[in-house]
Image 1 (cartoon, rainbow, N blue to C red):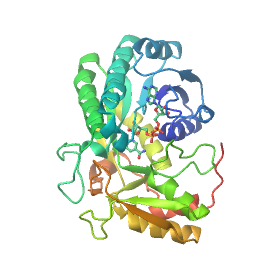
Image 2 (cartoon, rainbow, N blue to C red):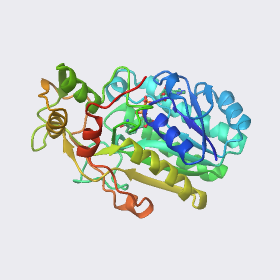
Image 3 (cartoon, helix red, strand yellow):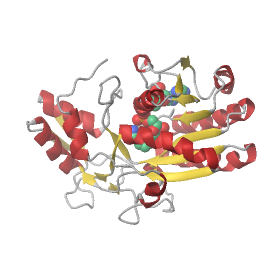
Image 4 (cartoon, rainbow, N blue to C red):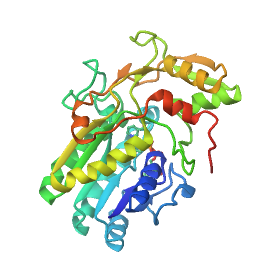
Length: 318
Ligand SMILES: NC(=O)c1ccc[n+]([C@@H]2O[C@H](COP(=O)([O-])OP(=O)(O)OC[C@H]3O[C@@H](n4cnc5c(N)ncnc54)[C@H](O)[C@@H]3O)[C@@H](O)[C@H]2O)c1
């Protein structure tokens, strides 16, 4: 299939583009490089453009005879979203509306949307099911929830089949090192931890007084290549059903302190931790209930320990 990958020059998008190519598809990356890397577009054609530009999207869908879209493009920094909420709604929500309009015009009828556990807000249950209430604690999470609602409302009217995958925290890199996790600035915990352990630099730990056993935030970490495969499987599922709304998580929580220890063991060096207050909008604990996920995606997810072991000392290109 010819698949338009919005945000395909970013972290998860580039890993998914690689897997799409490997599995016989053609990923057409559509990205404005606001937070992506041109050198990671190496698995298919590149269209430089902004998802808020409906005409540019339409042209790309038409020119490449696109069958399906995987929609990663978004601004995705929780803390930044609390300072620039209007930018988040403009980019993420207006961009998704423009994409739906372009897909309608071009006759592209399958969409996988990158949603997030941030749509849930503070967990009311130890693990979060898909029908958990949605009370996002930051504008980023709200923008993702609004996108989901827009997609779910528009899709049946325009005859679109869609999947909304609510990822938990994504970690790890392509094992071959062709693409890897790189954000600018890097706010994600694992690359920062590994760098601190390998270079002797500091690691900033935000929040040590969360209501969790060791006081640090608990997250459910998912390996990026496992997540990439979930997208390809989701495309199969929505080939024959109208909609799929699912968590993608391992169903196991790991605290930041536990992650620090795991990295220290893998790298063989102590991490110099600097403690800072909780960041605004950061929930204490987010762990998936993945009962539903297992009904449509039977897969052995890589453990955090294995992902970290693979990252320690790994060659990173680019
Ligand atoms: N990384 C995670 O742990 C995580 C968790 C849950 C959900 N998500 C979602 O997954 C998706 C990808 O996340 P990521 O970590 O790869 O982020 P990323 O920032 O690495 O990638 C996002 C890509 O989208 C592009 N982009 C942003 N706005 C655009 C616009 N207006 N037009 C065109 N391109 C635009 C950026 O240039 C970048 O290449 C996002 O939608 C994010 O909300 C990520």
